[in-house]
Amino acid sequence: MSRVMEQDVMMHGTLSRRGAIKILAALFLGPLLARQATAASLSAPPPEPGMVLKRLQKWECTNEECEPYVYDPSVGDLNVRDLDRPIPPGVAFEDLPDDWICPICNDPKRDFEPIGDWVEVWVKA
Image 1 (cartoon, rainbow, N blue to C red):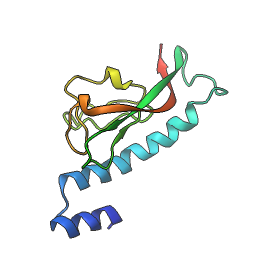
Image 2: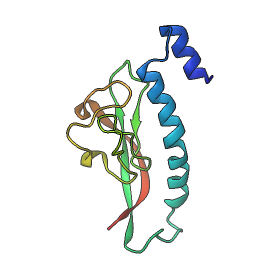
Image 3: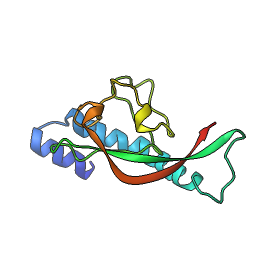
Image 4: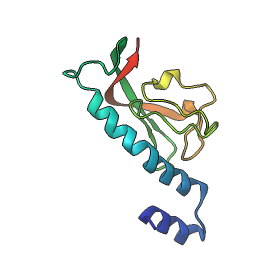
């Protein structure tokens, strides 16, 4: 059992939705982050023809009870409103659906602010 799961079970008696989402995010988004960090290099050629390197900003949830969650466009998101349609890497925060919510605390998109941290991501032109 992971440390996150143990803490969640100790606090709530069971694994909460929030704890489960954290575990899923770590399992599925971790490898994507590593892959994107390697691909998004100025010296690397485009992974596919017709792709361009974009510089996108990270955004953080302002809810004080959130972990905090940072939307990283080089990783994308699980899209808790529609798990069958995750947000792919390369989607700028501004281009997220209007009904997108924080996967940790369910706060709306308007409760996020830019943190001044930028990432480079290959996207289709």
